[in-house]
Every structure is written in structure tokens, then in C-alpha cells.
Image (tube, rainbow, N blue to C red; front, side, top):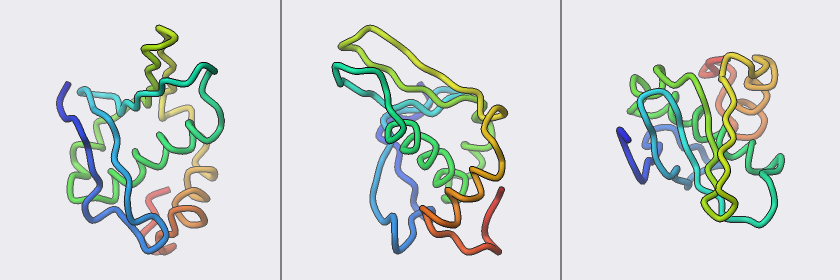
Length: 109
């Protein structure tokens, strides 16, 4: 673990002005989920938003080394990960500009 209780100072917007992730390892942003069910689209969107907000934060250098996003459910004893290289750039751009609401000129993707 390289960081825990991660926040996104400088990466928040008027629309998304709070939120914190659970922890990071050298190459992965992680979030704990304790639901009975497998992760859904909302959980996936949340972890992607954490990574994008991290890239826009004062800690951007730390997030540039992230290659995976992960969800860990200790209740189910399961881990789910996705490589950020497998995420569609146009979807990342839409999340940045339409959901988090970064300006087009500030968008990374």
C-alpha cells in the first residue's frame, strides 16, 4: 500500500466536490465494497472517477503510474480489476467532461 484514505485535492469540481478512495498500491487504485452482490456499473463508474480525479489533483504524478483499477470485497472474498489501457478513451472523456464536469480545455482524455 502506498496511500490510504486517498483524496483528490485540486481534482474536485462544483459538481463532484467530495469523495475519497480507500487505498492505492504502486499501480492500482482500490476501493472496498462489502455488498452481497458483485460490483455494478455504479461501483465501476466510482473507481474510474477516483482515478480521473486523481489525475486532475495535486497528486497527479502518483496517479500517472496507475495501470489498474480494483474493487475488493472482503465479504465475498473476491477481487475485480481492470487495466486502464482497456478503458475506452471516448468514455473517459465523457466521464471527465459530462459527469465530473472538467472543462474541455482541462480534459486529459
